Length: 113
Image (cartoon, rainbow, N blue to C red; front, side, top):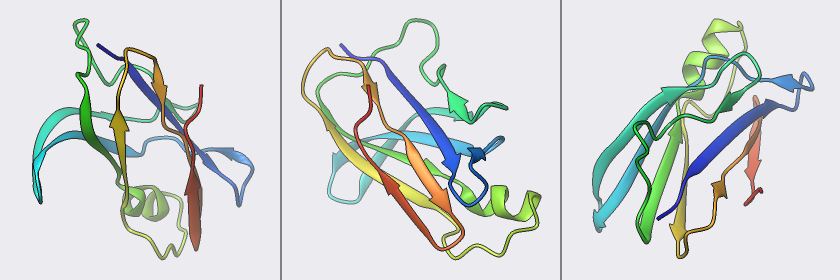
C-alpha cells in the first residue's frame, strides 16, 4: 500500500546524521508492536530502503525508532535522548517520509514529502 523513507539532520552541526540504527514496527494494539524492518541512516543521513523486496505498508499505526544514543556516542556528544520514537498513522497509498531534526537536547519531526 505505501512506501516509507526517513532522514535525520543534526541541527547542532547543520549536517546529516549518519549511521543511526533504525527500527520500524507496526502496532498490534496497546503496547504490542511487530518488527517490520531494521536499517540505518547512510552518510547523507537518509534511509530510503527500509522496506526491501518491494514490501509496502498497509493502513495502520506504525512506530519508527532511532537509536540516537549510538549516534551521540560515536560522535562524542553528550545527548539527552538515547532513543527517539515517532508513532504515525498510514491511511493511504501515498509515500510517507518521516524526517527527524535532532540535536543533543531536543528533536522535532514532521510529515515530509
